[in-house]
Image (cartoon, rainbow, N blue to C red; front, top):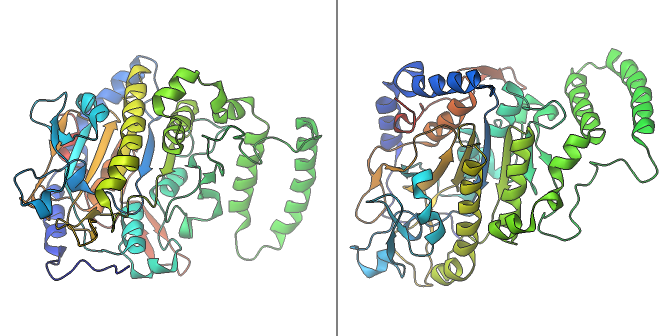
Length: 445
């Protein structure tokens, strides 16, 4: 397939600069974050930690169609508007696709950003951009050139529990989940198996059959002795990262709390049914268990089916949208019912949107000019739509936001300073984000 948008695509650099100029005029600690920080302080007085925030990111790999989910254009020509109708939601004036009725019912607990935009129409570079905040053409190599948001979180925040990893991929990493120059210690822990499978278990979490936790600890002692010798001759300075990696692994395999957090079979079957007995449903349920237990950043991949160059409407109707509708609405309800909405942020996103014009195969092609992102929780202001696109859903006409703006918002919830600078293997300095400020409309005043 071709990764080009076509002759109607325009350069969006101007839009991204507008984002920086517009949002950059807001003080990071002033009008955007001060209200949230006050709520964190109030939570601390009630006995909750102000530093235990967490993120669940659902990545719809392939590029979900904003025009058929969250930004329908019912007045557009037929070749743009497609087959689906709008329906009302629990928030007057906000309307979404008829195939998202369960999300519509909890729209008061969600916020829609309809004006995220960038300039890359290729899967790999755009995925790298959305996961790191950096637009690099070398992303076609398939390796992180800059650290992912989860790896930055692991480095600067760590886990909310000492016996759990800070960053987990359920069941496997999405595109560009890696730590790049931060080192191996900040790579995600991969669950490695679909939690919807009856025989689901997390490999390597429990000691090998026949090994007691005591014997595991004894073997660790021997390993420490060997590592002490290796550290003395390590010229590359990599042992620190490996030490942290091994230490985290040891705490996990010897901890009952960690084993219980990953044991999705402990959930009430009715809760599992509510999320849906699908991979996306059980992925998100496991993600909720993990952040509740102390993981700080969880990514879940729903990939492939969103790249709808052919049969866009039949694929969305029969497969993709019913599953994501059930799973996301269940997660949103769950975090609110459990009182987690002040500290757990849910983010539903892809690498780009889809073309306004339907192609000859009843599909939509890659389109970075506009996309929709769904948020819930995190102590942010819910029940609103932020930004808007033109009458064909091609480009933002109000409040355009870059990937950096979105990631800066996520980092704001996590309390991470995006001006913090790291150095790559060549010694070049890179801040956490090179552009973008938190989306002001989401933060309490």
